[in-house]
Length: 256
Image (cartoon, rainbow, N blue to C red; front, side):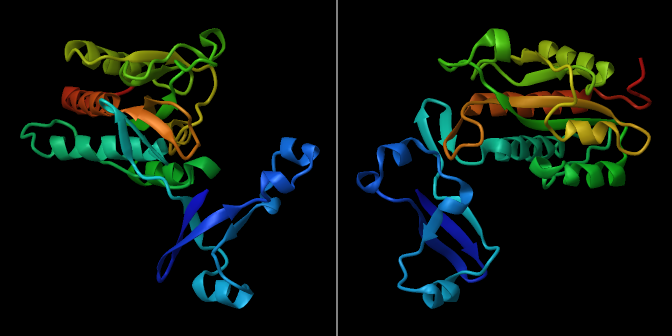
């Protein structure tokens, strides 16, 4: 698979290497290679040429661009969580045109969610808001091999997924649902009995505790180079964030 290596001098193209199937034994063909058994081929002749192009620690990403494949359905790498970051940014842009917002709205694009929600920890501690909504992606389970009895029933194109559970403040949950219904925004509900696998789990316990909600954009094929979303779900997430922010009044608190 082709990759782009991000160096100080620019992008260097490489290919993940693996022995051709014709040269493998039947046992090797069934084996999933481990990380140390995969290399990136830069098309160079020796180590010196490679070291002139890249350095240890340079990041490499799959060379997979965005493409609309059907209607509003798009495929790209890293929709998790570029889709969420875009939704937040677009919501803030639209809110900037509002004249009578009662709430101060702050946005944060956090880092290192996958390795410990570290960016959310520091951002939530710094801002200490009255309310917070984490925006991430969630599993669309409408593909052939997903059992809705096990994973829940979440449809791509069905609107943002509103989470409910111990990680979620019930006042925020009710307010988000009310905003969706008042503005005829399609939505889906997920029940999660544990701390969610999102920044919401870090935000909830920051400072003395922050009333937290979670919106997830339905996504197929998470953590692959070809993640799939319906752009309408992203748009409806933006609309719901805007509606929620506009609904807040001075003195609102996440206390029930």
